[in-house]
Picture 1 (cartoon, one colour):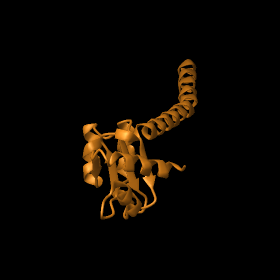
Picture 2 (cartoon, one colour):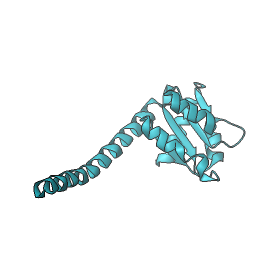
Picture 3 (cartoon, rainbow, N blue to C red):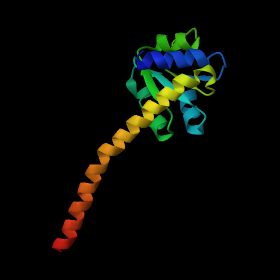
Picture 4 (tube, rainbow, N blue to C red):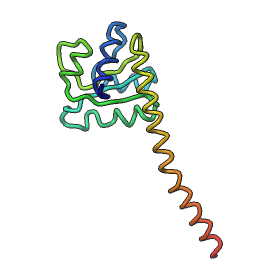
Length: 135
C-alpha cells in the first residue's frame, strides 16, 4: 500500500468520528492550535503556494503530513461533495494504527536528517577550533 493510499485510508476511517477540518484555512488553524493529528493536502493545487506552508508547519508541530494526487481523491476520502485542497484529522478514531505507522516513518526520516546534518556540524566546529589555534 502506497503512502498516499494510507493517508486516504486514515481520512476515511476518521470521517466516521466527524473530527476533520477541511480546506487550507481550517487545516492551517488546526496545525497552529496544535489539535491536528494528521494533515493531507492535494498535489494538484494551483498555484502550489496555497499549500506549500502545510508540510513546513506540520514538521514544526511534529504532525505527520502527506500529499495525495488530487483534490477529488481527497474529497472522496473525506466524504465531501466538492474537491478540497487539504484535510486535517483532529480525532484519530479507528485510524490509530495507520497514524502510528505514519508517525514512526516520520520519526525515522527526522532521525536520518539529524544523522546527516551531524557530521557537517562537527566539521565546522573542528575548523573553528583550528582557526582559533592559528591565531
